[in-house]
Amino acid sequence: MRQRPLKKDMSTSAQTAKKQRRKHENESRWTKSRLFVLFVIFALVPFTLVVSRGLLQHLVYKHRLKVPFFVDLSQPVDFSLNHTINMYLTSEEGISLGVWYTIPESQWREAHHKDLAWYQNQLSDGNPVFIYLHGNTGTRAAPHRVGVAKVLSALGYHVLVPDYRGFGDSSGEPTEAGLTKDALKVFKWVKERSGSSLVIFWGHSLGTGVSTNTAVKLIDEGIVLDGVILEGTFHFPKEKLPSHVFSWYYWKFPGMGYFFPEPWAENKIVFPTAENLRRMKSSLLFLHAEDDPMVLIQSAQHLYEIAVSTPNAERVKFVSFEGSLGYLHNGLYKDPRLPDIIKKFVSSL
Image 1 (tube, rainbow, N blue to C red):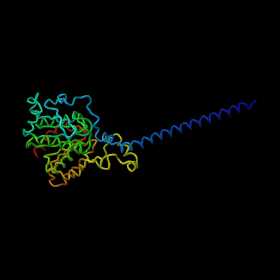
Image 2 (tube, rainbow, N blue to C red):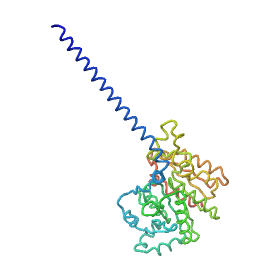
Image 3 (cartoon, rainbow, N blue to C red):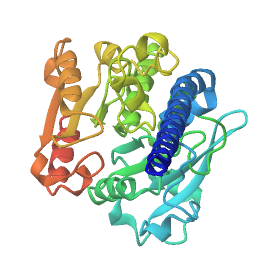
Image 4 (cartoon, helix red, strand yellow):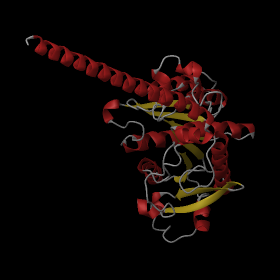
């Protein structure tokens, strides 16, 4: 009679051990499933980036992210640009570029209800003309781009802010060659109407690559830009772009670069700013915030050193802005010193 509880205890122990084995087996299967899913993700991400040109374009240019949202780009007055007209230029067959053209602020009353013909005539009034080539993401209506246009207009300058192909309400899809063609088109449109007025490029971020590419194309045609401002400039082939969605993948996992090279490698997207600077003859002004998280200031300093190593180094200037000011990548237009910096640069041309 006393042996029965012992058999019961032994049976219970066996059942408990069996349950534990099943639990461990289930946990093992779940762990293996997780690892398999992670493996598939890590395998597909680089493969997708390498084979998908469209995805690559979006990661670099982010042209489909049309911020600010739900705005009418044909109405610059909605952004307090009361002396601005919206127009469209044909860069090449099938490519229409949306452009805002802002005249000097002193003419804002006279500009009221004027048409494009009147605006075009103003380009030859002798005041400098800036062509602002913006960075990736968004449209010409982004607050910092509007801010730059207002600063320049207040100084008495003309300002043209185009959206590259694929950006804003411009047609087409962005490519490096295409963006350069777009900038060339805007420049030549201006030169045909501006007479002897100074024409200056202001490139920001991605726009610095477009600016230097275009400057070199013009040199090949025997034309030297009067001046180029490079804000937040970078050297594409050697630098990581931390804003890209999957860029962390390539830099955090050892060996991934060997098996899956970065999708912007192999000269698919180049923007050879360093090489361009060695050829350029224009006066240059580098602007950079010390706390820029997108493009480290060391990038601009490296490119500045390249620019000053060429003949006529006195034509090259570098201005940095303290990190404590919090301008980051897009906020330099807020600095109260900026107008004087720009005026001094323009007066030196």
